[in-house]
Amino acid sequence: MVSFIGRSIIQKIVTLFFVSVVSFLIIHLAPGEPSQVDPLNPKFTPEMVERFRQEFHLDKPLYIQYLYFYHDLFTGRTTSWKDNQSVLTKIWERFLNSLPLFIVGTILTWTLSFPIGIRSALFRGGAYDRGATFFSYLLISIPGFFFAYILIIFVVTRFHVPVIGMQTFGIGDATLPNLIMDRIWHLLIPSVLGATAGIAVLSRYVRSQMLEVEGQDYVRTAKAKGLPPDQVHYKHALRNALLPFVTMFGLILPGLIGGSVIIESIFSWPGMGRMAYEAILARDYPIILTVNFVSAILVLAGTFVSDVLYMVVDPRIRL
Image (cartoon, rainbow, N blue to C red; front, top):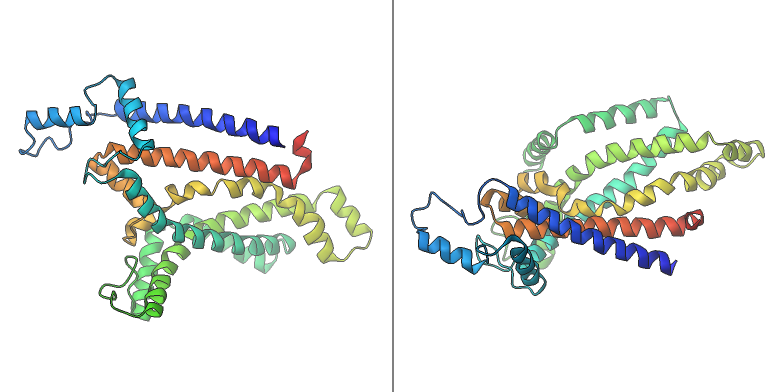
């Protein structure tokens, strides 16, 4: 197991290096030069642009720029071109804002998907299964932004409470319990919205996997032996149906960035996805490259966790 983990870590590091190189090249192959910060702004004289290029090493060859960028990134000296703030500091602040959304949404998705999918599989073709299938495809078909606006209108008109932002405007002088409840309320609506599509999709996977396992010979043998139905379904069938989801569990980490852009934009939540979107519009290359690098780390960390968990759950993987 130690050798497997060691090989996996080395492979992930090599992969991360190639990802950093490719992403750096793609950014510089995009139309326009990085030094073209705002060509329509008359305040940017040719002398200022040249000083800007020298400051950020844009006058050097591309491979030198690559070395300078990641050297400054790892030493914490990389700054945003937009506001001259530390890139790592900005990303850490936005990461802490996105983390609650990610955690609550993930908990809702995984705790609700399995009971819905398992019950649909056990009562295949029944009223519950047909109803769950209908609502799942309905949630998958509705665009996220449209469902978000419906949810906002319903909550605001029904309960007369604000849902935009991380906290209610002007509540800064409130007591600590009120501040906590206000933050929870603002967190709940976007988290529920982020979990709806995940519940719809994951419950379908759970149902399909349970139906496949229920048709295996060892499950029919357990039924023929007269074992209680709950023991057959939840001890024999469910444990084997969960194996593919161990792999899927490790791949949810990139959702910290990619899965929250629309939700954070609609609800004005200052998270990582919204920051990446704003950096693209502002051509803030240090932010774009760093967010892409962090995304690659999250993907590789997720696959590593999946490999280790799968090996722990299923000893046959060692073969």
